Length: 183
Image: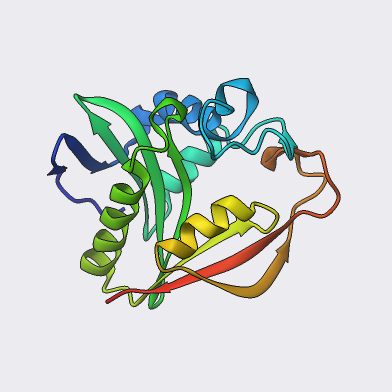
């Protein structure tokens, strides 16, 4: 596992998550995507997916995978956001991005993605950031486009029938690859 010391940016602290963080991270991620709590923020998937977004094994897998980290964002020592960074050749995959719903919409996500991009460049020399977004999430895709990500039109199927990824409420879900060149 690649590790780096905690880095402070204003009142936010960024560090690589460790296994002891799993019990705090799973509910944080779930709260940003699923259930009524997620509706407080704008990143909810509650209208298109029921069930879980992740579980302890999934979070542990990201933390322990070679070339991967789950960057945890804290304010006052309390986890308020996280994102996955996984080194894939000249690119870094950005995923599992979660900001506590009540903190969304105030510029925090923009600060975190900027830090994630900086980390990808400095830690792995990444030239591109890649992510997949559920293609019907127009508002979310537009947010990433405003941050310099471009739609590729490359779709991969949603894993229907695998409840580890949620229970779809629609039959037209797919993941689209978004890409951003890193300076």
